[in-house]
Length: 524
Image 1 (cartoon, rainbow, N blue to C red):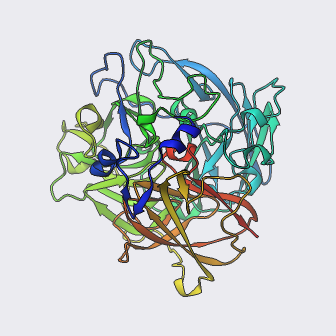
Image 2 (image 1 turned 45 degrees about the vertical axis):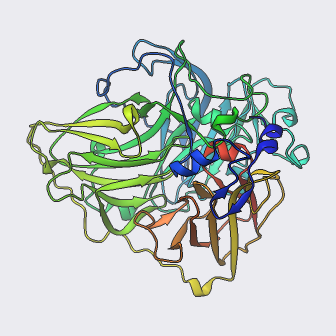
Image 3 (image 1 turned 30 degrees about the horizontal axis):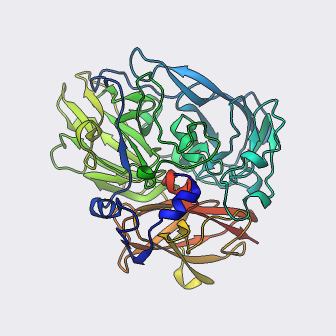
């Protein structure tokens, strides 16, 4: 739906998690399911699972290096790729591939990534999880206009009808833009994606996403799996039209105006599960330890990932890292619930399985074809494996709640007259709802009506409570995205460091984000 229609039919919040079903016919269904989104079915026959080999995104090499920095170049362009066998799909890509090339950097070294826009639309690149100066953070109206564009960017900056939209002062560029990432952060699994105002959903859906991995000495000193046994796995869902193109329920098929059709305002779910751009792939694995860097890059879909069969004794997924890097100690899971934009680094010991075992990675939140993700085929090959997961991984400073200089509440709601909102207000670029000071710790409390994964830019945070109790089983470590179920409340501590300027917090359900569930905060 476009913004005006969305506001016209928006449901009012009747309390923590209750919506007026009379205002939105599908509200009762959404609440009953407890999970966001509506399935968009493909219009062509889907391939059999576990036929495609798992691809691994290529590592981008720097075009030059110096004493302090590594310089990279990425061209954003349209490409025809074979996602489904025998079918070509037109995509918006980083460097002509999906996912885009993996950028690998080192803590303490500056990465300078120059993007050239040869797409038919403006773009904005956000390094998700990056500890980044404001002018390189990917603020949603800091547009990179296509090469040769004569448009100032104001007519395509985002969301028509949004208060203040056409008065926002974006730092626009034409053709090329250089993003500087100083590397003042620990080893972690990050990712980069489009973040354009009002069009993040279709931009990511069409292919604008890639990994960015940070390494450091602390992690290198651990006996963790490396090389071919260190696998980034970008999990997404998509739907396909009869001609092989991506289906997406845009209210305006020409994407001149943002938003989706009415039934998909709570998120778009695809019926094809892709891992690193391949549908339901398979991988031969040795009877050894593997590190799986799990990223949920879906627009709205939630996953509960498990291995099937479970190894004897359970605890197959040994979590070693979260959004912001290594945990203090490993955490064993039978399954992991992962919301859009979250990352979980896990180690799996395939020596716990007999040779020849076919181990499926399944999605317990899915049904039909979306209940399967990929398959690992355990070989009979005998290999040396000197890797393991130590009992201690890292020393993590626990932020002190008593040191918080402010407590702020942020309510994520769908409200009458305003659509998807934070604190009852739709997004207004340039209007900050918080002004934390550099060097301080604050307590931020997030509460929700429906299901919202909440993402904070600039600094990672620590979850200290969920619904007035202890943090949940997936809240450990430094986080930049926290999953909130309907009618939940989560408390986090965040310390603001290094960079002043305007940053964002928002829901990472991309359809919610595009329909104004964002807010600015200014670090002073």
